[in-house]
Length: 285
Image 1: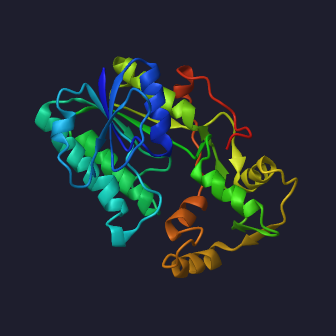
Image 2: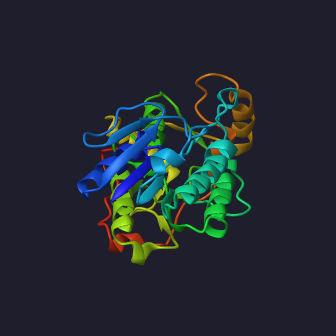
């Protein structure tokens, strides 16, 4: 198939490129900058304002991986713009050139009434796809991703090296981290098997459940540190610090990220594991 990938040069996108190519698909990657995998076609452009209909023309499917975890309003990078308005533009362009098949990358925790704006805007995007697009869609909602230098785990590794490791709250919130290679492979498989995935939303958590405390310890071990000295900071204090620090360069966490870390990010949906053998959390964070 001819597949267009949006956001294909990011952390998840690089793995999705490789998976699609390994399945024999021809892929066109739209991003502001490369590089792309050998065998992929690169189209330079900004999905916020570029003509999408032209690169979509004659495609068999679109994979939308566009997403941000942190905003930069000065650069016009906001959750509403990147998660919602980009999806509106994708739907419009696909409809214009009659491309019907869409795989949308969402996130576990996405739901109506979510506290974090990240999850709220992901939900609005999902709702647009389900109820207004008329597209043949599949939505993927992975939990925390690991493997190949995951941004979240790189942050944990960095903090684990400090003499005292600051941990939000009790550190008892639960997560089902999932290997990015598994998510990429599943994205390719749902395109290969449309009848089994059409109109479905798959929550994707890994085979093991970890508390935030345990993930900090695993991150420390991955950088050769046997143990950490945790400093559990109350969420109220962390929120105040984050509100102040959001305007400072290099501040390690945002208010929205804290809201997500304060709630469990788990799922009992194991349907995807019938398609892909899940990879447990190892040293390759």
